[in-house]
Image (cartoon, rainbow, N blue to C red; front, side):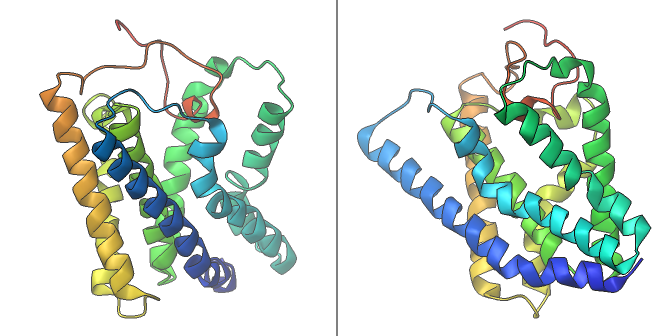
Length: 238
């Protein structure tokens, strides 16, 4: 595999991380506003609001895919194809409002995303490019903070003890990468952001546990693209 592909991805990461930090700041501002107004109702979410923070990061996989093709690196092309052209195909289907029963492919996409994540992280570590790994975790953990505080949903975290996908524990752990890597751009800003995300995540989960809703599962499948990779069977109960 050509190291140039992974260096290219890493070179884009300062901009991707800045984008994610912007949305983290928006989330924090929303939480402060809700606390000031004593708002407790579920925050209305949308596909754009939920997916926009990670969209540039996901689209970078298509750039890496194209660069892999240009270099003739077919193995890297296969690795980046999942969240590259694969994501674009799914996005086109969703945006065209085609009725698709995602339950038919839910298990396959769930397993595919998990394996693809492990392969990508392993390759970035192998090529000593750690900024993408931090960017993945910042994206994923910020999403879990939003879910816990605005949707009263601990689904992503709770599934660690439901499907035993133990690599999920790496998501918060990889937020500490800037603390040990002096090459990071805006290193201490990233360290602080990782700490804030960790604190908000834990605090949000504690609130859900105290309210007795930590174990609440989604009631049903929806047309939301986010359900494709997480829901593998009909949830039982409310």
